[in-house]
Length: 60
Image (cartoon, rainbow, N blue to C red):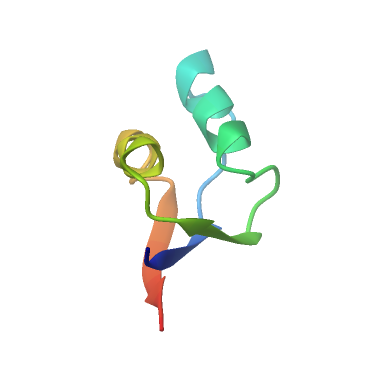
């Protein structure tokens, strides 16, 4: 399975609680933190919900 590197670029402050919890579920708690995750359907769904707050790149 491929891995993705996600980085939080915008704050969760002022966002709906659902988006804040999605960021926490992805392992992103602070700005500019990077997390590598497996590209499972569940993770891809969470990424889609907060794509305006993060950047995504594929890890080779």
